[in-house]
Length: 345
Length: 168
Image (cartoon, rainbow over all chains, first blue to last red; front, side, top):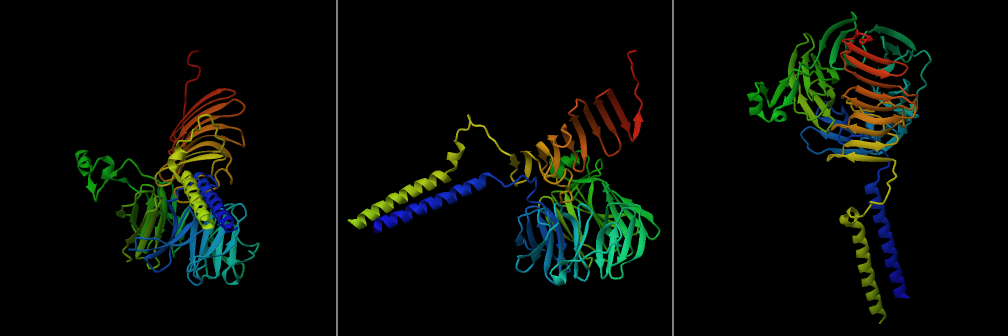
C-alpha cells in the first residue's frame, strides 16, 4: 500500500514536471502577438527630482528609475504593455503611463503596484500630464478627444464643459488650461469656463512653449523659434552636419587621410541635415536632438550654434531639461541615456 | 522486502524522470527534428537581431509602425490592415514592406526613409499599376498605367514638360 502511494506520488510529480517543461518549451517558441517593437529602446524620460534622477519607460512595458552615476536601472514596474509617455505626480508619488492597450496606467512609485487604469477605448494617448499643482491629470487621445481626471477623488473623470475650445491640451497651470490647435493657442479658465487669451500661431508640430509664450516647433529637419507676441518667426535651425564617429570610416588616421577634420573622435559630414526629434527651451538656450544621434545647443537670443553633444549610439528620441535648468537628460532608441551639465545662466 | 521494492521503484522512477526531463531540455533534439515533409501554418514569423530588436516580420496582419520619437501612431488603423513581409532597421523602425491591404485590395512594395515613405510600387485590383519615387524637396518620378500610360517628373515642385508622341 505504502509502495503504491509513493510510486503514485512520483508518477504524479513526473507528469506535473513534464507539463511545466512542455509549457516552458512552448513559451520559448511562440509569442502572443506580433508587435514590431524595439525592446531595448527608451520611449520617454521625466525628471522626478530637481536633477540627477529620472524615470524611463520602454516599449516592453518597463518603468525604471535611473540615477546619474548609478549604472543599474531600478525597475519600478513591468506593465506588459507598450508605454509611450510618462508623467510624474510628486505629491501622490504616482506615475501616469500612457500605454497601447490599457489606456493610462497609474503606478505607485514606491511600491511599483498599479493603482488603477484609466481606459481609452480602442485608442491610446500621445500626450499626458499632471497639472502644475498635481491635482489633475490630462490626456489627449489619437482621435482628438480630451480627458481630465481629478487625482484627489481617485481619478474620477472631470466632465469638460461644452464651451471648452478646440485643440489638444498642452498643460494645466492652476485653473488655466493651455490648448493648442492648428492656428491658435488658447488659455481657458477651467473654473469660470471662459477663454482668457487667444494667441494666433502660424506653426504646427509645437515641441515647447516658454514662459513668454515663445514657441519651438519642429518640421522634419528644421526647428523654428516663433515669437507669439508679434506672431513672428525669430530663427530657424538645422543641424548643420552629421557628426559621424571616425570608426565608421576606418578610424582617425583614415579620416585625416581623407582630409576630414576630426574632433573628439567625430568628423563632420555636411551632406546630411537629418530629421530632428525634439526641441526644448533652456533658460537662455535651445536644445535640439535628432536622428543624427547628436544634441545641439543654440543661443536663444541670437540663434547661434554654441555646442554639439555627441556620444549616443542611436537616434536621440527625447530630451528633457531639469527643473533648475542646470541639467539635460537624453535617451535614445538603443537604450542609451545621458545626463549633461548645462550652463544655467 | 517491501522497502526494497519501494527503493527499486523509486530509483526506476527517478531514472525515468531524469531521462524524460533530459529529452525535453536537450536543445540538439529540437534542432534535429526533420520538418522536410511538414507544412508550417502560422499567423506570423518574427526575425530578431542579437539585441532582440524585431528586424523582419512575416505576418497577417502586420503591426502598426513605430516612429523615431518613440511611439506608435494609428497609421494603418488599429489592429493593422496590411499583411505580408515588413522590414525594420537596427532601431526598430519600419523601412519597407511587400504587402497586400484589406481595404482596397492593392498589392504594393514600399521603401521608407527613417521619417517617410520614398518609393512605392503598386498594383491595383482592377489592373492599373504605379511606380513612384519622391523626396522631401518635392522631386518626384511617377510612372503609371491604367486607362492610359502616364509619365510625370517633378523637380522642386515644378512639373517637367515631356514631349508626347515622339515617334510621330
